[in-house]
Image 1 (cartoon, protein in one colour):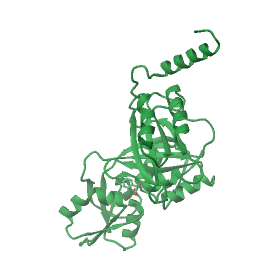
Image 2: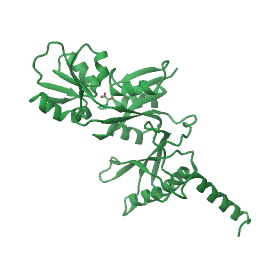
Image 3: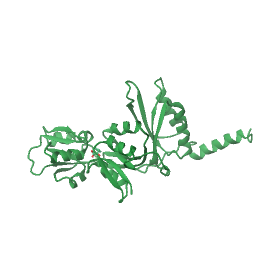
Image 4: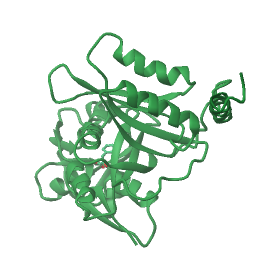
Length: 303
Ligand SMILES: O=C(O)C(=O)Cc1ccccc1
């Protein structure tokens, strides 16, 4: 049985993701912010933490990216991909909706629906979708935009379901832990994540990407975030493959040489099961064969 922190309170999308990534015997512990959930696993209060990382409409979750790039290293060892549509909840008997509260990512994904269905309602940001439900229950706001499961946790009335301006929106969540013990086994459908601080000079980012492109490695995400000093950036790069594979080990070694700083954020199976694209002459067997050939040349066996 493991204790797993998650971005709560109860009834968030992240709780749903955490449930899908853990077993029935595991204990899920809610934290009010992403930073607190990550701090819990860093301090060893929990064995893991589940946090959202990116959304197909709103993009990255900055608190998660910055939280993984800074302080003691954490490793993502599993991910979940959830379809995201919302419910609108009010206190029973509410007739007029003047304020509508939610996590900023949720508000951004229902803006058109609110304009069309609740004209004049003022959006108010809360720390999470479930925190909005708590605030509505306490009478602070009139309506909350929540995960469909939130109504099972809070005594509120469902005013609308399946609310989403963009159909098929998805959010990806990570289960992270401190770097100890073995990594998940490679499956052929894996994702590796790093954060790199490239030198501040012409072509530095292009050089990093060329290392990946030259080995036929397909990127799945590239984001830049400020490195806390004005004008300096960190690059978050996700790509297909697992560090256990020779072709991925080879590119990580090259990135380590080229970057001022590179942090490994994990290799784990992709939630969507998409298998890695392998370009001609860039498969693992090609890398092993090439390394064997060099070793043979060094032994003087091949001239
Ligand atoms: O607030 C939540 O429920 C979260 O888990 C974060 C979030 C917010 C909006 C869409 C997906 C995840």
